[in-house]
Length: 425
Image (cartoon, rainbow, N blue to C red):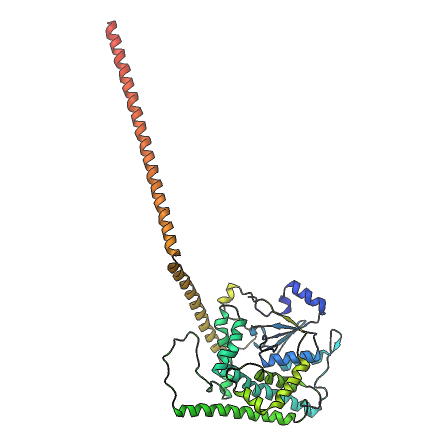
């Protein structure tokens, strides 16, 4: 299977040749989820990695939009390809690039080098805090609120995939976030019209309007989410204070990562703008900070590789690729069971497609026309066989008539000879 994302060694020769003309052999290729809403990626870690590389190596790297995270060593995007090295996760990418010192003759600045040892230690803690807690908030807005999932993110995810992957992969991606959000208490909370829908589920009868108590529960749960998000936003507002960046006047890794998350809470046009409204009304300082970081690191002239997804038929019947070194756990068994379920659904899709083709042929008259032509051919063959049999019978009758005429002639000759003998006597 050739997927939408491939390591540079698997790119077509012409593509590698063209890239080599503008880049040296030490090409940095960042594999990320595609972009949406005027952002280079809809994933916060991918967006942060893009902003980081643009800050330290402006326009000296390549972005390859990827829709198959199974190609990553960690099974998640982003990951970086450089010569023979493949590095995954945002912190590991930052650590790897900072050790290169120089790429294509360009010195790589250490954006955290201005920090004191104490500040570096706290920076690592803040990076983990942003990824975990603010990451939960972003995932809640995208995957938990039903309106945002069905109307904001899922259409983009489906458009990135070919048929039939677009019909089931988006829901698998959403399901992968469920354990994380359940642990944070942010899964499937009431939204504007919260009602979870499952693929291939039969429509249910309309539910009666909820009573007053249920409405209070919905309002209370949404208020809990607002309070949790506000507590997190308060922390970073105090940390930022009146400074342009968190540490002095230098944009650091914490600034990049937080800005990536805030941008994904403010840029999309959410159907349920629960936390987007909270940010806009109460935390304009965080929005200004994210816009400042993005205007400085926006990848305007970065080469973006958009490979055409070409899938073989074999890929439609096999499970997705996984690294052999990955340990087998109870979670992996559950994942295999889920993949087997989707494999059976895939076979059902093919059966349904075949039945639809047959039904269309019957309804449109194609099958009837085929049967009529087949009957005509059979009738013509039967007529030809009858004609051949009649010709054979006529040939046999002609031979019998000739034999009778010869016998009569012989008898006449014998009679004439007998008469001549009698006359002589």
